[in-house]
Image 1 (cartoon, rainbow, N blue to C red):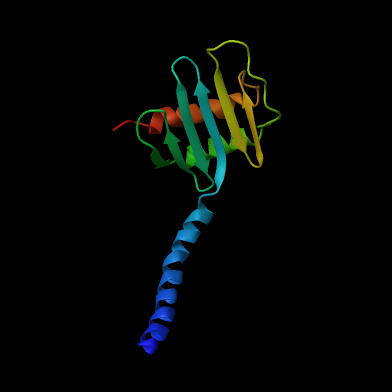
Image 2: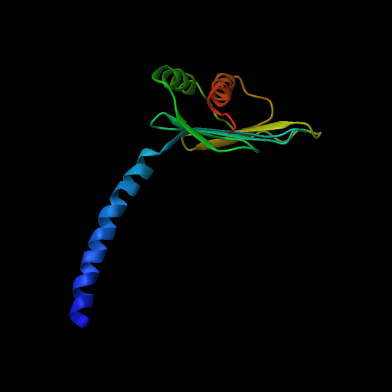
Length: 139
């Protein structure tokens, strides 16, 4: 009975280690390039756009499914062009009142919140909004 355990354990470990290698490669390929979150307002927005380094996106809203799509080469180039001019800066203080949309933008190792979009954020947010409208569709 002991010999069976001695033989089975290494075979089982080998099978598990080879089956886990593709999963690790998939995680490495899904490096986040840029992420945008839009939250708040009376409508209760909770939109999220995550663009990965491989050109694919994950889109989600407060209601509905999470959608995974891949950008065209032209869309990816246009977005990367806008990202070259992006300056994240510091987070803005929440304004007085109730009906404000909070934009959270993460790029590289920086993340900040804004209520009034800084000038360098505008093309990036506009492009990510366009991607959301084009590819997110409820089932």
